[in-house]
Length: 212
Image 1: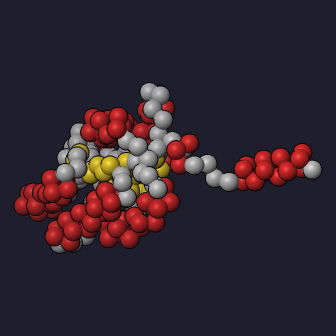
Image 2: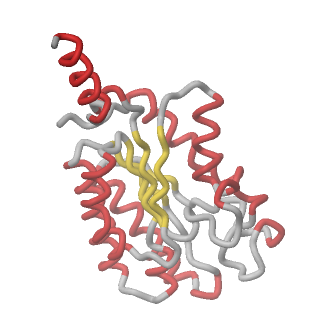
Image 3: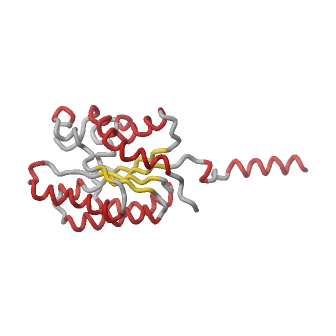
């Protein structure tokens, strides 16, 4: 009888999920095609390269890529609550806004959506990192200035770090862009990661999974 009870207990414990403390802290990347590796192999994208760099440096984090090509700040805001509940990220990277800008959506709407996503992440106990983007030159210098200020205002208002331009050193080089001129090529992905890493690295030292 005792042996059967032990077998039952072992079987039950194996079926139960591991407690959160036993799992690697999650870095959740909420983004669009720039994170979803549009036009290239997924394993070549900067988000996959981020997981590789963490592994190489012995940093125990699990990267979850929630990038969807074509997504907007409104789409990200709609998706985020379920993602936060499911993954309970220690760090949330928000990489959205490019498609809003390309569609000419009002910058106050973009600002409000980004700010709401930052608040949701903070309320869930996540550290938040905002990844800024710029519009192509043909959208005009005036709109681009206003567009960039959106990310600066949101980051400053919420007290979160900002990568000023995710594609710095990439968008200006045609050899690093795909034929559409909007999406970075595989060769550009390490540079994109290098743009993110210096701002993300300090957060890794203090990141902890949110408490229940």
